[in-house]
Image (cartoon, rainbow, N blue to C red; front, side, top):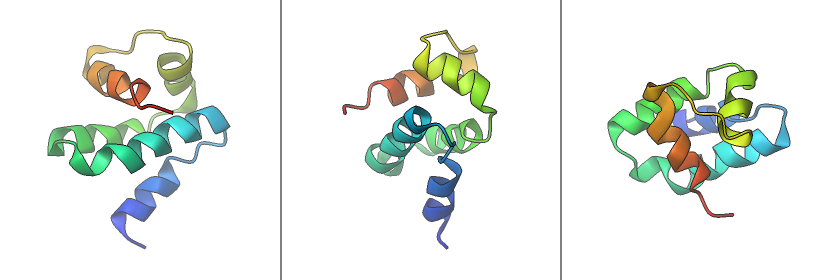
Length: 78
């Protein structure tokens, strides 16, 4: 299994809304993102569901280290 396939598997959260947002980012932006942003995303998908739900779905501001990534994930068109 490739690293990208493993990362896609890690994007599966069991909550459809999170799955869609994370996989959409992975499919559409990840390969063109900077190495810094890719590394940040890999750490982001390891976080628990609760903060991800708050930051991505409830529009609660994340800590500064996640701010730009959350903006980029939310900006992915449907």
